[in-house]
Image (cartoon, rainbow, N blue to C red; front, side, top):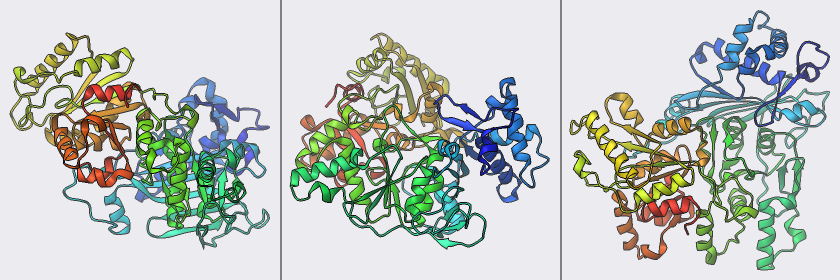
Length: 604
């Protein structure tokens, strides 16, 4: 990849050097070649040959006749690497396609073959990164590094889905001087930065084995001159939402001048996100914030995975704007607020507060808590800039639990007779409104009564036919019904709080998690949704009645307070009413109809 002119295909004569993918991002010979080489290297390592790989590219375009020239060029470049001279064309394509893992399971690799392809192509001082991460569950962490924490044996959530980066490696062939680095181009052709959970972060020049510890800087005040904020080459500090929030706060308090506010400096780095993470890990920047981008409903796992552990092991922190860890599951993820905050740790709480205020265009004032909640319910967490606050997010998929949401919850053992299936008041009307708004409606329901022998699967199908008939009689339509019967190991794995049925619905609907919403009456529903993650609404019908009673015991007037958003800032109230912190933020609503009003932007 360091052979830029060759990898671009300049002077090659037999292959194009760059294509454009569907999202208009470039893909080069180097992207394909690096992915093939890393995939081949991992497959050759005995200890890792069975560990799957999730990577950015695939070989579909290379396999066709239109890709023959590019395919030949990639193959020639791969064969130039010592040890890979005999790689066949089919081995090359298979190695690239090995990166099709879905991001599920206890252990897997994540690769970004070239992060910052634009920087790779431009050359000069522009940056690009080859990022590789080993992802694993809590059990994998314990097996590899010793136990970090004991799993909660009483927790309903599936600990096997608690995926986190265990090892991160970032190759940066064009990085020479930044933070703790004091290199010249003649001294070293770039830097290798690596970290392992609980083992620290270290870097070395690429051409020698001279490892040195990576350490974040010590800036402790966001407005101080010692604080450096990493930004893209096209950005300015003043236009960042978090900086606007600082200026707004100063205007309210009249305690800080604008010149003092912007005393911090901006470090411009192009291109991609991984090099900006590296800047924080190496002490070259105090903070990097990836703000929400209009029209981008989710972020790619490979743009973050390898860097998270590097920053954290260098002493920094990475989270969403509510200080919650990134849930790097699947091939894409949607952090709450669609913002990612990367800091030296000391600044993290300040930075997250400013990012929240900037994104929400709200001052940090106790009197505006209710306004903040209502803004959230209008879709502020969606992929939009602050100027778009108040416009409803365009959801494409509604995931609905069944008992207690669509139909009346009859208690244990559940609906086992046709005559017991009765619709909740307003549920058909709510589903009809979703149909009219062209929102796909999929039921995802646990039905353990089948495994218990109280109901046959055929009888369950009869009950579902009755549900469909009752809804259709009121002009409402379901697009699909997914259920878990708890029969056998696969049935148990499929049941909520596992997100398996939800992921199936996303795949079948060709919808990203950020465009989906879960509406249920139990914490199992909310835990499953949090693992996607997608926006979630907890109805106070069915099992949700106990939460309504708990709210009233806390002197909350549910008639006037609902819908009520519980965020991490409301953790104490959430705990008091029995809502687990890991499902926050979650919106409490009276019933399905109220949830749909919020989803369609007419609630709150």
